[in-house]
Amino acid sequence: MDTTAKQHMIKSSDWGNVLLGLWLVISPFVLNYSSLQTAKFNDILLGVAVGLLALAGATGMWKGPKQFKAAGFVTALLGAWLIVSAFVLGFAHELRPMWNNVVVGIVVGVLALSEALGSTSTGT
Image (cartoon, rainbow, N blue to C red; front, side):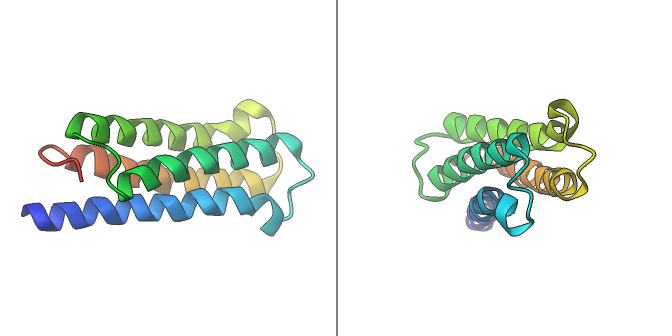
């Protein structure tokens, strides 16, 4: 894959995670589980974190490939936390937030890993 195509794929991954971060912030209200305080605050905090990390990558804030790669791996870890958080925090019996977190966590993780592993020679 040439450098231009790789940069486009990485920026697309970042913008995808920005949108998923926004979704996490509003999903407790859209999916009607805002009364579950633990799930609501977990999703809002993770949504802000995922969204800001991805926005920083999409706008070129990371100055080198090491920073860019590290941000991708941190975002992938946040995606992994999303997958297990319903079980660890005790709201796995609530299907809407549990499935929301599992599906969004998988997509966030895949996008972040594709970004981190695809950023070997470029930081943008």
